[in-house]
Length: 173
Image (cartoon, rainbow, N blue to C red; front, side):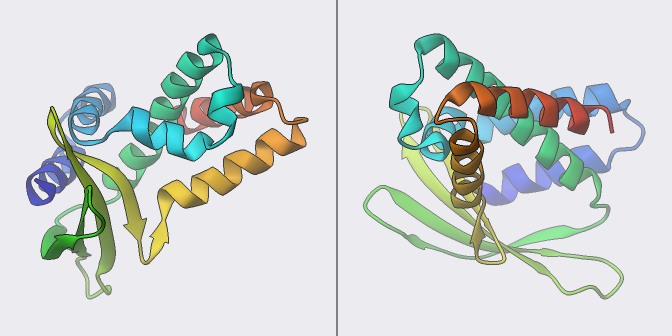
């Protein structure tokens, strides 16, 4: 699952013959197929999820997906000719499998270690966290988002505004 999804993403984003908008759309399809965006988004928002209205929750999940998509599309587009090697897979907890891999970079650069926390659900396997060089992206974002909410008086509105701005900036690069 991981090997196939990552290789598809690397190949897709390395295709310079496709217009950027088409690459991003195809990447969105890969992303939503492979990631449990709602579960990740809820985890990242943490205790603030319960405080948000249903409208805020829906807007947050859409903005969160757009932010993650723009971030990863940018990162994957930097890779060209790299390969992914799956090194190990083992049960992480009762519901998760931790898949250890590395991106083998060109030009003699050291490989990048990526761990993928994967859950199996009704729709098959889905990624619920990406751990880059031992740093959990979900935990990092949770901390960042909580800080933004706290600076905004404990209201999710400040986070939504920040996500709108950040996503817009990433998409216009």
